Image (cartoon, rainbow, N blue to C red; front, side, top):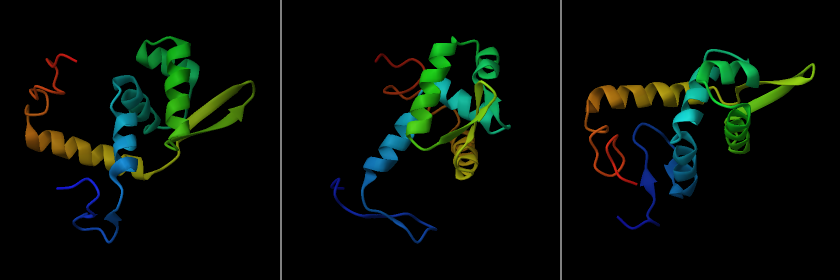
Length: 123
């Protein structure tokens, strides 16, 4: 199928006219740390220091990933004293993460065994 062809999304009235935005969305979710951050934020608001403790990552790493997610419109922040508190900007992300879990459950180990993107892939 040509890249410029419109794709009807089954069960939805919206057509995917330009896959570029979807590619950017999934690329923003493709990093394990960013995905873990979103999973933690799905449980509620967190400060950077809390996320660093949960994830075992450096503050600068977590801050960089949060900046990426904020720039993508997926995470929002609000000031709380001298810190910022982060939350999911879009509740639809919960549906997307749940749908991903369903796809992974249905495909079993096929995704993990993918020679291009699976766990053993050489990049």
